[in-house]
Figure 1 (spheres, rainbow, N blue to C red):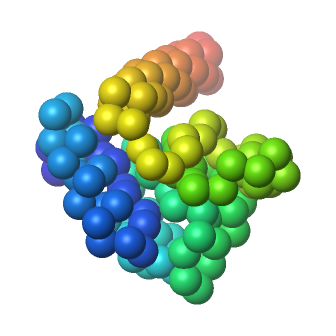
Figure 2 (cartoon, rainbow, N blue to C red):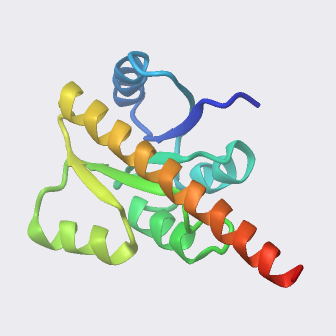
Length: 145
């Protein structure tokens, strides 16, 4: 497995997936695709993404349901979620926040906005991972006293 960040694109629309893959091609990340809510959960388990670009309206499980399950899971709660949605009603944004999303982006996706948010979220993920490693190291040192 490479040291590149891993981004899972979860969208049932092939044109949206191809567009996001093309945009993400400009930054150094590994990508994987999921085509529905259940596939997203399965791919999270196997691909172990740092970030998920999560469509809200998908077959089997909605993006809201997927996000809730990920954020409640001990192994998956740290995965960053950027909900990508054509929905822009206030209630939908509130539901996205309540389901645990880290951020959201409206469709049609703007390339610069997508890349900037992805880069910022991956930076935040790296810092969070480093803090967790330091915390574990300190605990280990204290228990070895």
